[in-house]
Length: 401
Image (cartoon, rainbow, N blue to C red; front, side):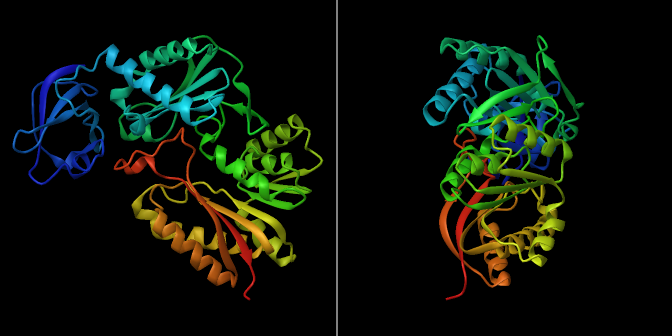
């Protein structure tokens, strides 16, 4: 895969690369000298011939090159890949509970385009770039090896490379087993809460591990409280509230599959008498609750990304402002309100401003308790902007004094 092709940038281009990022875009390239196939490792030079590193190329993608190393004399071989895998695992061992966690997080682990999640003794792989796809099986075997060194045996691997991002790389979508088949409903425990994770049919890789410690942080606000969990998916925040001693919890999601799974998870945790799950559109339910003058001690908003591009950011702001306004109005005076955005394009400043506007429109005051972000197993690599995406606020809501 490694060859002698040299890609030279235009003068004044390569700003992402030079500021610490890992991408070269199609419109930044001046020339390509050499013979290569898409997915091959090529060498990148600045306009003046200065060597900038090596990465894999794909002419089907606007992200033309994804950097693997800034050292042009580095061989991208089995030893190199094992080193990256081992570094990723050593980092997780020091920063998170590794019973279920994200083992590989793309650019932030210097393995661009690849995600690997560990759910108990199962790995779920998502490959979103052609170059890294060629290393996929090798990385899986390396992960099994380093985990086994610590006494962790992986019983099965499932691939969830069925995201539409593959289309942009000119790659077919795919999902299925890597190796032997196994039961794809996997039981995990997180924050003392049990879940059944459907790795074959659940959203993305089956479960959202990035909110692990945000869910834990909400437990202390929920004892003996009435809680509303919006966009509950398979019940994650709702179940944390119930386990923490909430008197009653309502979890809402538009996906019937997710709600059915949430109900099963409630039974699994023996909290089915405390938790009520509704399959409804949150945007339609909140106005009805407001009309019925329903108020909660704790309201949690964990919506899907309202925007996945800069082009739709204006509509996303309207959506976030509306959902937060309605959520804030449902909180009792002195109650607590948690809200988040998982969109990279909804940056911290814009999201913060939007919540402030929502509170003003609701005629409520917000007292910030905490600002949080994604779990450390989804590390934020500074200058690799795509790795920072989750913004999570906890507020106390108070009436005007």
